Length: 114
Length: 112
Image (cartoon, rainbow over all chains, first blue to last red):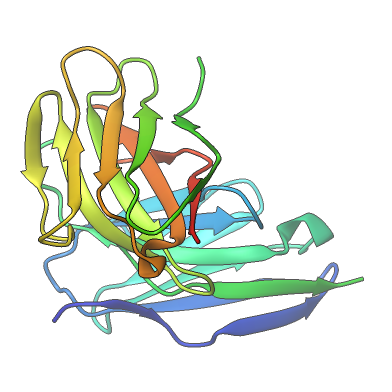
């Protein structure tokens, strides 16, 4: 069936470096994508989203890139900080009307070295 | 504006008992989603509800699990006759007129 997956289970980066977290999706009908951050013991926290009519969107220290040709999504975090350490999930959705359910990947752990 | 509220945060049940998990969506949100998360895994979709209606329950186990979102009050995820395999974190998310969904802090169910 269709699935959303992540290339790497863990990522370790030096504080201050840039982080790139990658995600592959297989449902070509998906037109909405979100990155969530989940800290230990907490619920997923919305980071940034992007729709399929865009290929790049920037937020505060984060950028999401969407490559529909190869069904690839990435999250870039600039100047990674210890507080960025968490599990990151990509999620995809097919917009039906105003709402749609999200399908999540397995998650990747980002560990920031001081 | 309070976020998505889930209670209880932690729930311990013996095998065979019932578990009731509650979710109050954000103010103004009429769409609720329930997800289950096993340790070291992603979030698995269970059910999507709007007020008084189940829109998509394709992720719900066929037996023992049910969900409702009444006109008044929180959404309830009910698990009857719990087994150890039901132990997990259960997250609720709500959304309004946009697709963006906000999550609660989850209920961690432990079946002993």
